[in-house]
Length: 125
Image 1 (spheres, rainbow, N blue to C red):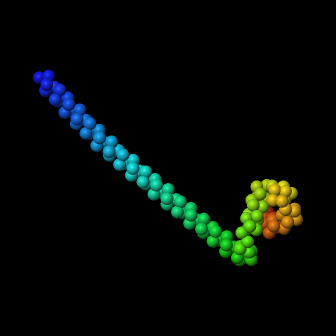
Image 2: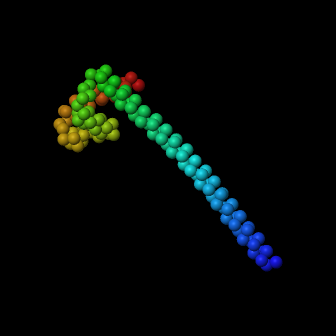
Image 3: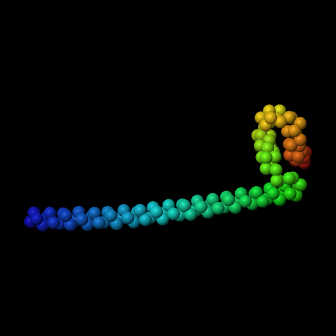
């Protein structure tokens, strides 16, 4: 009788081990599918952002060409971008000139197309 009890217990233990293995395998597959879905949605989001960046770059190039701005001088464009960024963040013309090692007149001339638009908007509103 004791032998049968041991055989039954070993059988139940083996059955539970097999059941545990299959359930773990199913859970891993479900986690892997969920991870793949996150990965796909993340990649789609990255592709959308890249497309938006390309569109913005093209729009900027179109606007620059319509305004007659030379887009071939990369250093000048980067300098203008930096100066405009500092100006939009509230830096004074003097501090921008010191930061970029330019004269205040040069900074004012670079910012003049952008400050005129800002003043016009304030008046219109």
